[in-house]
Amino acid sequence: MFFHIVLERNMQLHPRYFGRNLRENLVSKLMKDVEGTCSGRHGFVVAVTGIENIGKGLIRDGTGFVTFPVKYQCVVFRPFKGEILEAVVTMVNKMGFFAEAGPVQIFVSNHLIPDDMEFQSGDMPNYTTSDGSVKIQKDSEVRLKIIGTRVDATEIFCIGTIKDDFLGVINDPATV
Amino acid sequence: MSVVTDSPVHSSSSDDFVAFLDAELNASSPNSSPENEAENEDELEIVRIKRQKFESIEETEGSTSEGIIIRNLEASAEVDVCTHPGSFGNMCIRCGQKLDGEAGVTFGYIHKGLRLHDEEISRLRNADMKSLLCRKKLYLVLDLDHTLLNSTHLAHLSSEESYLFNQTDSLADVSKGSLFKLEHMHMMTKLRPFVRPFLKEASEMFEMYIYTMGDRPYALEMAKLLDPQGEYFNSKVISRDDGTQKHQKGLDVVLGQESAVLILDDTEHAWTKHKDNLILMERYHFFASSCRQFGFSCKSLAELKSDENETDGALAKILQVLKQVHCIYFDKDQEDLVDRDVRQVLSTVRSEVLSGCVILFSRICHGALPSLQKMAEQMGATCLTEIDSSVTHVVATDVGTEKSRWAVKENKILVHPLWIEAANYFWQKQPEENFIIKKKQ
Image 1 (cartoon, rainbow over the protein chains, first blue to last red):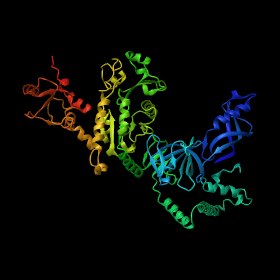
Image 2 (cartoon, each protein chain N blue to C red; image 1 turned 90 degrees about the vertical axis):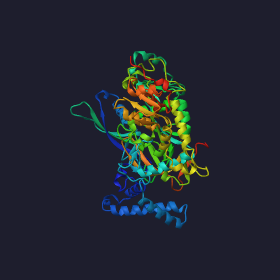
Image 3 (cartoon, rainbow over the protein chains, first blue to last red; image 1 turned 30 degrees about the vertical axis):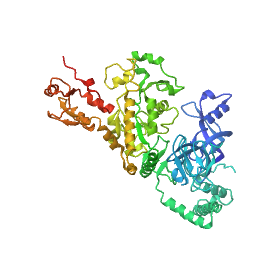
Image 4 (cartoon, rainbow over the protein chains, first blue to last red; image 1 turned 180 degrees about the horizontal axis):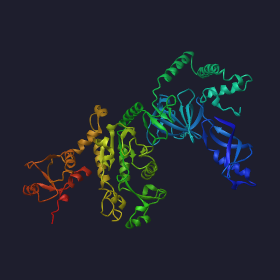
């Protein structure tokens, strides 16, 4: 789920950036440092939307760097256990399928795929129902439920299921 | 609703969406904050009740009241007996619980972070086996270096090989070429002649894997050269980063029954645990650096501006062997299909190569004799140690020995030990005229 929150970060700036464009340099460095990173607490930082406050800079002893405490608003994405998400299938194999919802990698094991869907290998491996009406293959969109999440430095891993009601394929790329 | 500073960490189960929502809803009411600590237990209870209500609301949409009870029971039973078939990012793939990550085998080549436990691996192997047998396919594990191609560092090209820089094929349409320069890896790669027809025909009989002792980026680059469409080796490229043991290859990372896997490799000692599945390939030395690596001082194929014969080379011959093994495997009565073992078929085919030959060894050095004898016996020959009238071939390195002279006198065929090795590589009895011992001058 997406959140719009205020985070704080201490930014270190090299003296070469001091001058008229100090604030711009600080903001661009912040964006470069923070956008695309991940943390366990807030999830994935998608974009910085604004700067709330830049505190007084403190010169570090021994170096010429100055540390500014910056409060900024940003959009973060964090999956939760129990959340329902839409994701795009990236890989299908006999163990289940892998899907992506933005920066999050989700794995749905075949234990959590309804029993009437069977794996068909071949050129385009897929899971399909016995009557062929529903098919999950690469680039299909599926609605799944997250049952576990784990965050490391740059990625978020999730385990998902489509075994519950109202979960499964939303959009079949073959019919589009 | 926007969350300002309170992160979900403060709630008792930060992972859970429902708990988080509850925490937020409670936080916004006036009397919750100071009593948070003390009310933790009550909060947990409330959360639990609310979660059950939440779930039962979900269920009343689509099922009868009986269904709800059964589903709740089933749900709790499932959680209790989750066998944790595997893990993705250290979470069980079935129940989402955090796992330690020590059990089972890592399948990083399929997807980063994927790990499967032994029971699940057996279950997958069995399921896959049935589907493969229906499609009449077996598994084939292919080595890269010196088997399907030969690579060298750009800096190791000899002066006589420098003409190759002008002859490399374009990387834009890989399916037409065989010599490629990979700038970003500082390497030049030559694909073995006949490799593309080989892969195409083998893919109809086998599900193929690449297993190399190179690292993963190298393995993936080579897979792109051999299989630009990704139809043969899609997520079946195993590199040394995926193996469970250093310097050894194993079938534990291959999702196929050992009784249905054939291995094509030029290095025997990499497969000590699976020698019976191995078909040994004659090494492909195109570049001088490769010859030197194995101690050969002769000129390389590139220096001689020649190449292995396309239709009559090692790959073509081995393809015939593979076809033969496949044919015999799927030939017998239907009932035996599940119990069949490709290793037995392989040894049967091997034992027909020199069947009927009775071999006498003469003055072969003691180090080489046991392996040579074993090779000959595996190919169906009978090995004797004393002169006997049933002998058909005498294998020696010197025409002057007693047994050699006896062979000439009795019109027995006198050959060099390389005749046995050639038969081993080509799976066919080679014409003995090509292996006559040269007289020492």
